[in-house]
Image: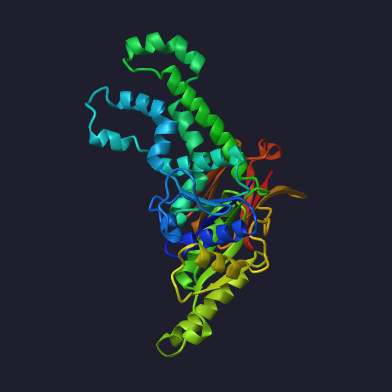
Amino acid sequence: MRIILYTGKGGVGKTSVAAATACKIAGEGKKVLVLSTDQAHSLGDSFGVKLSDEPVEINENLYAMEIDSIIENEKAWSNIKGYIEKLMMLKSEKNIESEELLVFPGFEELLSLLKIKDIYDEGIYDVLIVDCAPTGETMSLLKFPDLFKWWMEKLFPIKRKGAKIAKPIIEATVKIPMPSDEAFDDIEKIYSKIDELHSLILNKDVVSLRIVTTPEKIVVKEAKRSFSYLHLFNYNVDGIIINKIFSEDSLMGYFEKWKKIQNESIEDIYQSFKGIPIFKLELMNNELREYDMLKKVGDSIYRDVNPEEILFKDKIFTVETDKEGYLLRINMPFIDKKELKLSQKGDEITISIKNERRSLILPNKLQSKEIASAKYNDGSLNIYFS
């Protein structure tokens, strides 16, 4: 199965572009599912159909669904949630505030990813198109496999076997209940799923992301930031879609000043994302709704290009050797050096860009080495080890 995720700043038209792509691929005979991970769902509005947590047939070969985080929460989390609730209720009564505390930040995004993994494992569809939430939430979604694994290890460091031995002593002396077998089952299941999920979303032969932008300087800057953050987490961006371009005829009179702004932004996109396929879509004279209109838009965006293909593949992390030792090169364009921080602790390095941070385990050949120096130039972070 091929998986394509569409992301971008809020209001750029991600949902319409994702739906249009799905219509084009389905029209060429492939079985396609398009789903929304955005909690403010609008995918159903695009098709003019009420969607649910189960796939709904839109047209021949085309299905759509909107992930319901409450349903997914209960499926994946109920036993662990029950255990944490016990811990929280030791000294207080259950109330609305305690219920809200059990909705962990970003957990809805993780459930969306796990649902994508479940659909992939079922293998019913040829292509899965994902309409992601706006950029910030999408980054939460994509970095969660790393963060959640760390979080779970800190919260549940004790193994099942050790827990059974220690349970009577701990519960009698510390008066803290230990996780039940069912809670441990859920923990192990989520661990396993997250490991498999991480491998899947880093598989550049299966998963790629496409950034939707509009020809406005603020939105283009956001697209560049997204691109940098996605590279930090080793995700492959294989396309940029410039949406809502004003036609030449419309940029007359009152709108004439937009002509220069638009042309400069489009030129900036072409210069900045060299090598990556760029697609353009003019602002339509009708709303992008209903199957026929979306199919037309899909044809207009991709023309003779098959959107199902991997359109571009970039090697983001490379390890090289030179006379000074080892060099870890990370391809991360559009970064302000002043916002970049780097640290090392044992075999783990942490890279921070403004408000985004990633800790990663070094490749085997670098684990016994220490950072000697680091430079950022020509869109690459070069870390030297000795």
